[in-house]
Length: 157
Image (tube, one colour):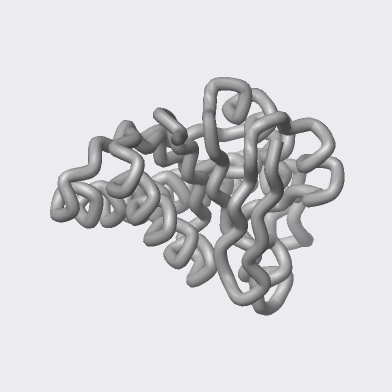
């Protein structure tokens, strides 16, 4: 039975379903959850169009975007923590920014179970939150992985 469940969310419907599964398993196994929202830094490489050609305008836009992403991530994590509290499940929340795949691999080293939103359950590509190659991730991670969403499937150690 896992003692530490790592739940990574992007706020999508698949992530919410995965979060419910993480809470259910944590309750059954008396495990704690580490809830993480990863802001992928690939958006920071956008150069913008003519309307953003000035360095000052671009910097202001990225500041605005970054603050918005952080507010959204914090709201998603707070909502999950409230739900966990109502189920008497202990949660440690964390907001990280960086390369999603690298962070997932690093974080999973300390987890007994990794719970993720299904990367194939997202709608339009612009709506997708977490960006990672599932096959590469599964080869790099040693712990079991549970995917939320319509195409859920687990993988053992």
